[in-house]
Image (cartoon, rainbow, N blue to C red):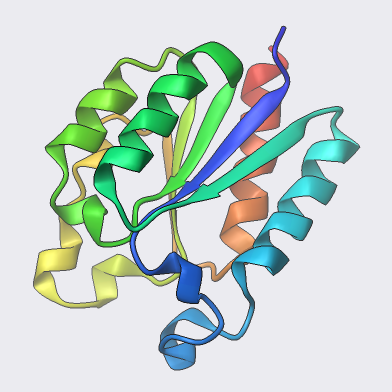
Length: 146
């Protein structure tokens, strides 16, 4: 059984730690990667972290995951609210999917309250800061161990 978990990040998450720290905090994507790798290693899994500001690259990586990942943690950024294409790609993935948002999207602007990704996600974490990623990885490990 494949023991790789993909952690996918969408638009502007390359600026994590720099962009709007009052909303997203000071941790960087490298910090997220280290925390998730540690949780995965505890459970005998490994991670592959990917970030792109380009919707097609995210979709291509989801397609790749169909053959090389047991589960996906995804924070699509603003694509959460706009991308039927990412939803369609996730619908072609057979493993568990956890949607993760650093901020509580339900306390923000009204357009952020709708998520296309939630229609496919097996779980959603929002408002837990970057700690949500590690929790999502822990859940994927649990689901992929059954």
